[in-house]
Length: 249
Image (cartoon, rainbow, N blue to C red):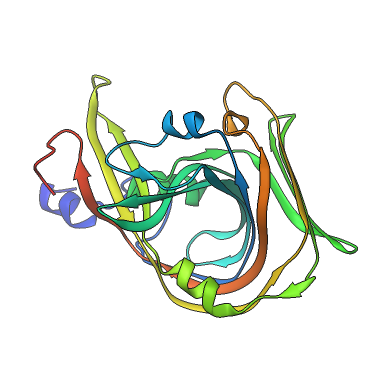
């Protein structure tokens, strides 16, 4: 393979059999359970990187079923998003993500910098209850429940929330182990259609784990819970802050 052929075909690894196709990526019937809870402010300060700013001591714990995802197939995801501001604009910082499918792990980390790790999340309905569980190996680290479709919610609020920017810390090491890329990345979801949205009572348990520390942001009080189904496009990102060259955008 000639040098110009490498450059013209290289977009992901491995070169001759990439782990995922080029984006952007469309998701159909993506189903969310999002439990917003109050946590310890000092614990948030310890994990949210500047120049992002914390707005309130809140965390959104998410379980997401993705049955129809461009290039990624059918998988489930679970993790934490922290409400923040950047240059005065409200958004969300994706703090942790655990999922059971290799292509979105590889694509998420390599393209945007999603903090994805391999685990075993499950999100389904048990009679009258939405149930989400997250196991890291044999250890249960999260369990959430929510009443199934107790109260309808106006889709406008969901659309507004999904239109806000999201932020990621993308880190790719050099061959000597030092950071080659260390960037704050911003991305958006677009072309959103909300097919249904509901609120209801919820519970959330987080358990300590050395390598999956979701419980480091402890649950002090549940503020709200949402269940919704949407079609959306996950757009590619932009760099808004370069930690290795702070004056460069």
